[in-house]
Amino acid sequence: MPLLGMNIPWAIETDGNATKVLFEKLEPNALITWEIHPNFRAAIEPQMKAMQQRFKSASSLERKYIYAFSNFLSSELFLAKT
Image 1: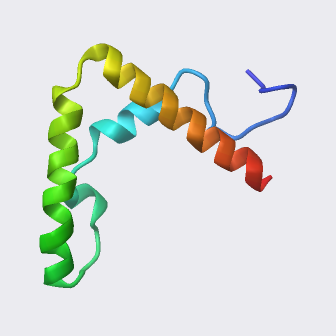
Image 2: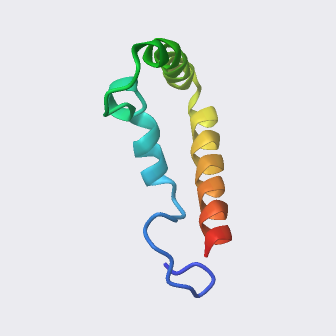
Image 3: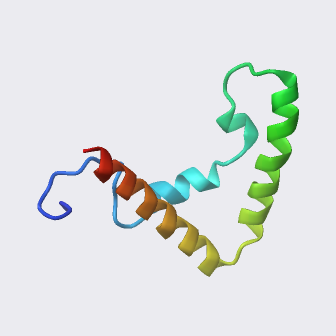
């Protein structure tokens, strides 16, 4: 369904399903796909794993809020650039 009568690409969606799929794939090996300095990897991986644990332990309502808020932010950023 067009947003405000405009033809918006699939990146902006109203149900948050793509956002949900992206959040479920959050893990260091999925996000760090190129060779990085070992010190940077050692610093960033624990933070990514901690976020993944917090996300997995969140309630259903908290996850829905995260999806909706992230979807809203990405929509606003996209619209600000067009």
